[in-house]
Image (tube, rainbow, N blue to C red; front, top):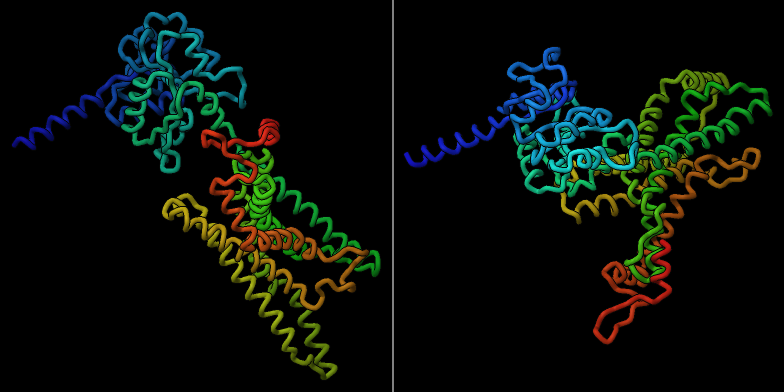
Length: 478
């Protein structure tokens, strides 16, 4: 009986907490969607509007009053209006004194104003506790209930108790609050929904550059050259043949660019003799984009696989095979079987299959749902050890593709080598440098540096360590 009464009292307390009244200033789409969600979770909602009599399309069970009357009914007020309309809040300074104001607004542009909307609101109503929240959730997601992929709500504010109450509301709505600190973080939170794939800019520009460069390169070799020399029209290659050369080249190059910043960072650490120095900004940004570069490479590799699968059903291929068969039958001859050619062809296909399999495995382990289930050593093993194995297999796949024509002068057209030879430059550089770095004499030094050892550090009388004056000066420049 005591346990039953305890459960009943706890349930009563939870029910009373959910019956808390929340005021919402503004009857727009987001305000109505948020009110409906809160009503479903047991909250009592009061809208504040400049025209209470003309407000419509509001959720059933919500009350509509003037701003002043609505503010007196709740300690928590959600400001669901744009920054341009904050002016009316100055007239309610006395009513809003000591209340929690939740700013949910966003701007049209990143860093549109000198200060964030939340900080501006705090300046208008200094006697209230301003908390930034809910600006990363869309009205459509609240209405449709599709919040599975967007449950995290960023929260910031200067008053810890006010933030805690807002976080309680967020949890009650089935969302996950994430405390970002003081109100100074509001600018970052407001810029977050306005960002358009910020980590994909470098991979996108690199992918576009590679595709455009190798497109014109292949057009010169495969279309313009045959037309100039033999008046042969090969423009049909633009649909399948040339893209199927560009995609594997882009995939291999981007995969090599995933691991190139790592070897550059290792060389920098060996040169500096310490890990306590910031990398250059360009290298730091490059390393942060490695996941996106790898996914872009996987996308190009997948396109290469699809384009390769349709080769047998192409008209040009079927026409060539049919004419070759007829020619052999008419001449009563056949091509002798070449074991070396069979080995090259099968090895080329086998290396491609194995490389693509590991490529897909790398892409799967980069998913948050998968990476969160493995520890750091397992993740590093897949992304580093298997990643380099993938690069080796794909590089070998490209080399074997050349076969006997690899680095042959006869394959030059207008002194231009085949496109796949150019694609091998960066992967080979990465693999050669990596092979040098894993030599015991170099790897041991690099491991010591990454464990905190410094080449130019000296112990002081107090047992502390300091860097040379020149090193400190260089740090300040970086």
